[in-house]
Image 1 (cartoon, rainbow, N blue to C red):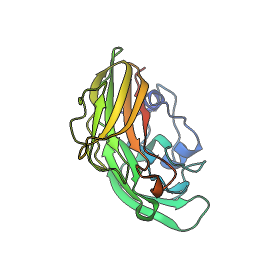
Image 2 (tube, rainbow, N blue to C red; image 1 turned 90 degrees about the vertical axis):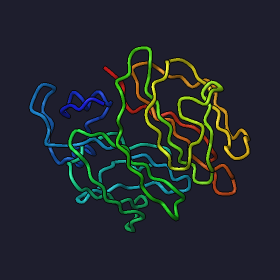
Image 3 (tube, rainbow, N blue to C red; image 1 turned 60 degrees about the horizontal axis):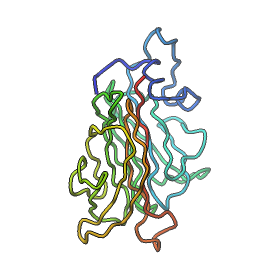
Image 4 (cartoon, one colour; image 1 turned 45 degrees about the vertical axis):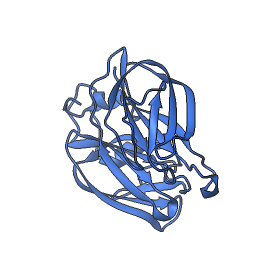
Length: 240
């Protein structure tokens, strides 16, 4: 991703709604599209991938930042955060006990995704810098994130080919963004150990000028919970 000054115009490119939650994160006001930049900041999104985890309230050092509880398989969208060492706490919705407290460092003008992972009893967070090449009208950028806690190494086939994500994807592995031609694709997940087909999803639409994350989520074994193994396509960025 080309480094650029984070301003309101770029925020709109991410589709961020500059709501109360964003203001609470930065505790700062935004100027108009061509006005002064906001204070040194980075963007962070938060995705809930704990299949049996409760709905969550998110707290920074100072206050709760989400108006609505963060549910499984939903995202707190990219929002501006002050740079430097930051701390987040996650509580079950309307509860006072903290399920997870995590610390990380944000660098100015960088974009990050934080994934809440594992079963609820061992909930944890994984953060990654989102670094992609600019998409064009005929291509998208796509990465794969393996977040199914009871699924071992998988092979991911796109239209029956193992590219672009490689032949083995381990739990909690986050691949680089890869260039892919726009169109309708079929995605098949196979167990690397046995070759068994775990899941096939047809008719996934990939559009140009977009950046996506393809999430492997849920439980392979229904005995572990009601949220079964599935795929979800998240849109990180739309080129304006």
